[in-house]
Length: 324
Image (cartoon, rainbow, N blue to C red; front, top):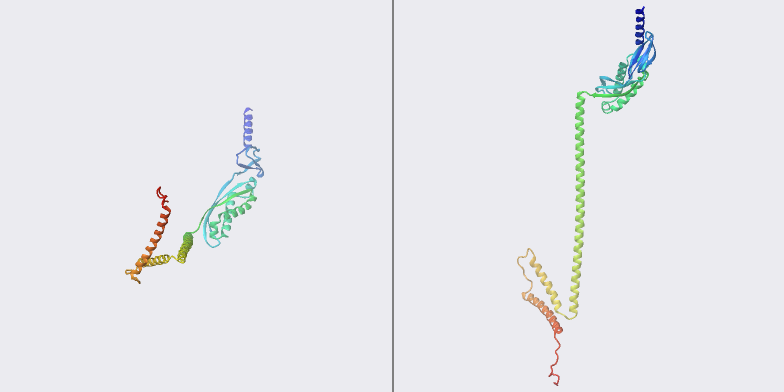
């Protein structure tokens, strides 16, 4: 009797223990009633009577990553490239992920692989190498739309690597080298052009400044000649006035001065080794004598005027007043 009760209690405890379902965080369990899906067990403690209910699928609800294996793809311009990638996805509906598709991971991988071939096959080799973002966006849109009925959200699709054939890589290397050499030649030509322009600008400014300097010098020379001509005209006018006043020495002085200046020009000539005077030496001496007389006359007149001004007035003596 007592043993039977103990067995019954143990059986009840075992049944209760089998009926309790503990679901971990990040997972959801599908519950089946005699093989038919009824509900989803959430994370935590759940009670479903054993023998009537059982766990169907344990679905991971966290974001997961799936590797896309490497494959050979022929591009639009018939170039063979090798590529691989990764897919990030998250299950949003555990029931659909468990019962709408047989093998979720294999299905996502195959779907991504086929669409990767479709997208990259419609592009040229240069586009596949330079437009990875466009490839990722197109794959994400297509795969996410296809897996929506499976209760799955595709968050990201990334191309990891694109490997062209070795001969194409070598050709691309030569093309890049030629392009860089072309850019170097263009930059060198532009630098030479800029240098020539700057040099021409400098020469232009130099010529402008030189022309301005010549113009200023010519203006100064003309001004000096003008002043010299004015002084010559004034001297000639004064000599003419002196001649008109009856002073013959003035014309002699003027002629002698011009004569001496002409002779000095002959003496300063670099090609003149011997000077032949076209007149007699006595004429030159006479002319110089006229200059001397003119100078003595001027000095004598000045001395006479000073003597007249400086002579004191003589007063008569005490005995001179009575003389008649």
